[in-house]
Length: 274
Image (cartoon, rainbow, N blue to C red):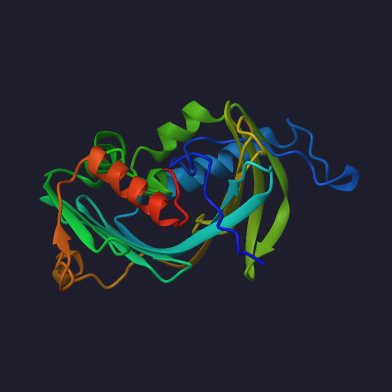
């Protein structure tokens, strides 16, 4: 029997929190009225967003999964693990490990943004001074690059959420990996979002689940957050980019990225959109 290769055929939206929503209930016993606990849910979301936006630094590991809807209608899940280290106002590092073992790296040191693509063994460096917010805007919109969970790293998170949320509901108190959480359901124009926020003095997101309700097959994106640290040990060397031996330097441009994606498709590898 010939093995089949599966391809990601949906554009995975970068804004993991920015585009928010309210999910359908799992069944009659678990249904949630759209207006149930709306004020309570919005207060928790606001507190979470402001807590993240005001954090001077943090590190966290995010285990991510996302659906790829095939032409047959079947959903295939792909995923990765991302270790994020942020130090405001102008330092960010994201180490990405794909499920096939490939490792990519993004580093911003306040003066330049660097990205290493392991599968192609190439890297790019672009002078770009400014804050982490500035870098995210440039990386995502200027370079047309993929950066899941970008809004969680931005000081603009409270504003972005308030602009995008149309409905909110408090679902229940629940536990994620042993952490007591408030389970919320939010609704935006394009997606539905569920988020589990830790109770207590550190209202950090522990899990989120996004449903892209306007896309065929209603694909989902989920992230589980592990080992939140609001005072990570940070050294300058952490944000120093050193290209791996044998890596080739390329131009940092949307067209170059698109060319890499085309090359990967020709080789028969699975690929993912933003």
